[in-house]
Image (cartoon, rainbow, N blue to C red; front, side):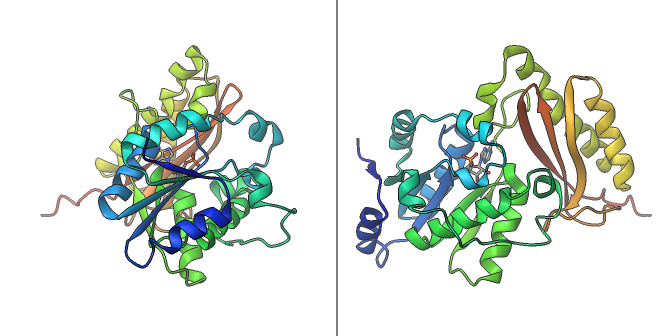
Length: 288
Ligand code: AMP
């Protein structure tokens, strides 16, 4: 096995001190239970960087429900085996006392972009995310960091944090990896029963229906949402948390499609909350 597993901040700092000046360091931050979605980020980092660090840390402070934190899948040994053939150089897997030796009094908080969607549904979530990502950036000091469009609001929030705080890292967004039936890969899919797994496909179908409507010229967000909701109604046991049409840059709700946008959805399938989104743009006008 060629991947090196490091558990302490001291070790990874020492290791990278010899690497950083002669190599581009790429960072993929994860909470583990790795799947092909994470692999897409790692592949991209591998292509663009000389040295790839994958972090695995289930970050308690970004969970707004402690049961969700306790139940989050953890599989470090399997994750390390998963990383090895992908050409990862270092897996950084600190434990909680390493990252938070005392409860943190310092947080990084991005306002406005976190007012809607998951920011509204999961109070404190993004503050936990930006705080841990900033800590990881300080520890690793990567040249490039890779985040999935699966968490498009998170990606927008991190881009904003990096811009606002002049963090010298390039943020790279990577497209969503889906199962053949459209379900976006997620570590949380492991929690779904067979029946829930089947029901969960309605999320992507709903997003696709709205995108098709946009492609046919519909640009009113309200109508796009109605279209998606009509598909969601096919699975009455899927409980909608939010469905929004937002601008692609900042993920702020919009009324009318005038440029690149996303339709974002969050829903409960049984006890599991899933999120997904799809890119939409206004239809090319037919012209005269
Ligand atoms: P997580 O381990 O869920 O915190 O995710 C770590 C990173 O992987 C985040 O940047 C996610 O957006 C990204 N990611 C998770 N699932 C997918 C997916 N299906 N496609 C693309 N990126 C993903």
